[in-house]
Length: 64
Ligand SMILES: [Zn+2]
Image (cartoon, rainbow, N blue to C red; front, side, top):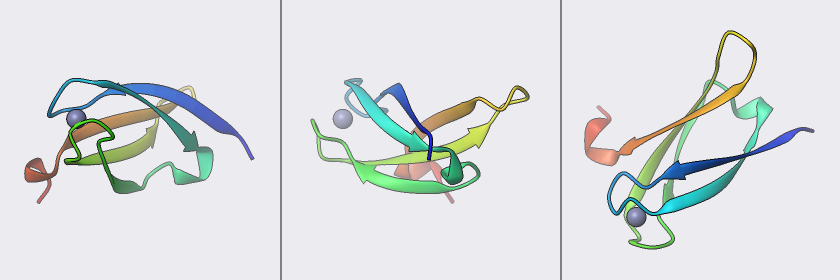
């Protein structure tokens, strides 16, 4: 199993958070509370053309 560490910025407070992403999570999305401001961050995991894992974060309000 391959874990990738990625740094993202909290969409609410801007704090940098490191997350561990499992390659099997590509194409999925999940919600995890920010460790700093405790608001729910939506993580979307995808793969780019070179099979690199890409993590996109957004506010819960942006997700329909
Ligand atoms: Zn935050």
